[in-house]
Image (tube, rainbow, N blue to C red; front, side):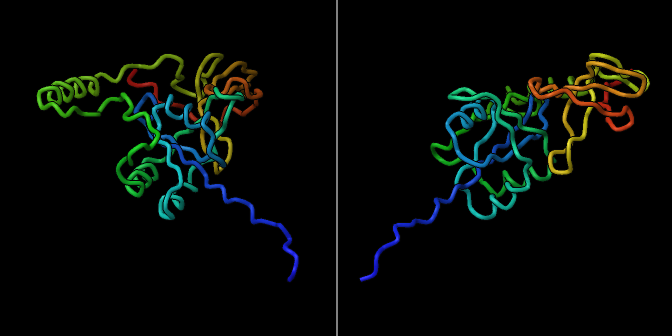
Length: 206
């Protein structure tokens, strides 16, 4: 009898897909290389849905998500989950289907537009939402033109075709050169962009 080599195939590690809505109701999502309790806990804190061991249809869409970032170590970490296209978000939700029993999630995010099962409460929510939509207040810290950009303003900086655009805060301006730091990842190194390469966020009506 031949000797057994004792070699085993490496275990397959399925990526973890995290999707949800940010504080403004905009879709965001990311994929992570492996499943960790700390990542799941951090995702739930962000009111995101965690997709684990998904069928091929969901995985194919999930691989289109940008790679997420983990800050910190041990049992408590912070996640950087960027905004994604609404179309991709909707497709992933449709493919994943309704929540399975025991699926880790933070239920639903508290964002404008979510309705209540109570008809009376639903009517009150819709009326309040319509009122809010008409107001659209000006957000402080958002410049109205590239010429107005100064220290403390928030702009959008393009990182890469895969990672897309990220919110960044201006910490220094020298003529047309901006020194920035990522708003949601302040521990990352500062970086420099020419003023013509950043995008502006709509500050609302003047």
